[in-house]
Structures are given as structure tokens and as C-alpha cells.
Length: 158
Image (tube, rainbow, N blue to C red):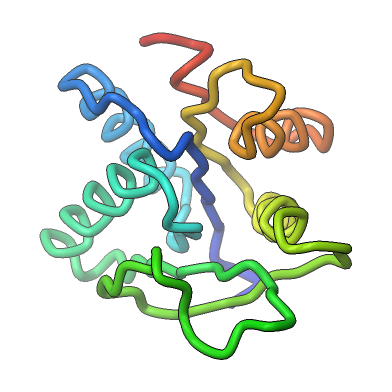
């Protein structure tokens, strides 16, 4: 990725109720992020919220090609991975990355991938309820810990 392009990543629970209100508030935050120079959006691709953000960014991209928005799919590092996992949805991404930190077993590879995504992000969108066993919530807590600019739609209802 270019060092001059600003980056946004998104995280959410596997299942999220996508309401008209959530669509509208997410779209508004994405518009504001783009106005602040965000051009790269990172996706882990395992949640309804990821799908919502992907769809909104894709719509904006199709209507405003001059913005040169990029959608990047981020795989968790899996030392055994030889092909895309069965949950991978083939969408129109502009790139693929495997941002990684050291990990000790498969589930932690997702957590560390999330941390690596957050580390390279200027802004982070979340739909993460306060659930200690949730990967999305753990990512949210990490983003707060490292003082990222963020919005969490689950905790700060619009």
C-alpha cells in the first residue's frame, strides 16, 4: 500500500442485524472518512458488517471512479493454508494482503491479523457489542488501547 493513502479497516460480529438506520449511519461515516482522505478499505470478510461496508464502498466507487478507492481483502496467516478458506467470498477486491504478527494457533492468527489491520489504519469502523469472547470486540479493545480514531455502531447507537 502507498504510504500516502489513508486506510480504514472494519470489523463486526459474524451476524449483525442490518437495519436502514445502520446502513444510513455507516454510509455517513464512510462519506466523512473519504472526505478526510481515506482511500483504502481493509476487509476480513467474515461478518455481515464487513459485507455492509464493502457494499457501501463499492457503490461509492462505482459512482466516483476519480476517488480511486481500493478494497483490500486481508487473510489471516495460516501456516497450513494452501487455498482460500471455504468462507471466502470472491468479490471484486483491488488487492489481497496477509498482514501478520506472530501467533501460536489458528484462532489467534485471526486476532493478530485484526491487530495488524488496525495498526496500519487511520480510521476503524466497528459493529462490536461488549462480548468478551468476540473477536470483533477484542479488536475493538485493541484499537482503543492503541488510540485509533474509530466509530463503534454497536456501542454508540446513532
